[in-house]
Amino acid sequence: MEVKNSRAYGRANFLEVSKMALYYNKESGVIQRPLQVKKVKALVEGMPWLKSLEVQEGFDSERLLVLLGKLKDVLNRLNVPTDKQFDLRFRKIRRTKKTGMYLPALQLLIVDPRETQSLWHELAHWLEDTGSVQMEWNGSVSEDIRERYPKGRWEKEMRAVALQKMIKLI
Image (cartoon, rainbow, N blue to C red; front, top):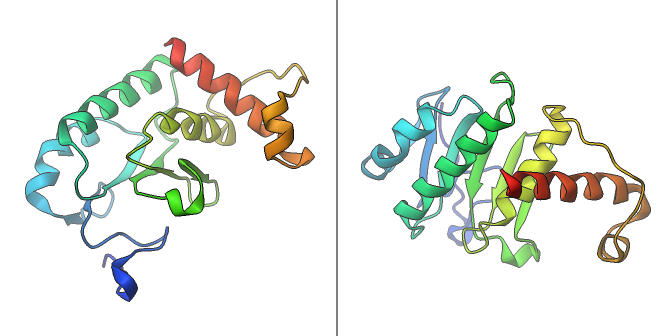
């Protein structure tokens, strides 16, 4: 499998892998920047939910290992089925005015490496979307959600917020 890289302005869009990033895909075996991948390969291999990992250049490898360890622990404690998988990308996305994004059609979590706490919110969207964890919603909507999202998205966002709070307790 060939990794597509963006040539215009040196930036990759959300579907492409940045040419300067550490990248490892378990299914296809594609490795980009193999010396850096060695550090995280064993941890990624031990996470059956993770299909691929992309980390932008400059992200602290020790911080990454701690974050991936916490992610593995959370998914284990929630008993998430191992057949549910996602791709994870740590990418600077502030220009989108977001700290994280979940793209359900691609099962892709994108987290800004400067705002890693958003990983738990995006993970909550993935958990709900895949049905890995069931969450009840009491019907109340916070003022913040009412202002930021259209009415049709309130329930989804409130469930994600509730799941995020549950994850933080783990």
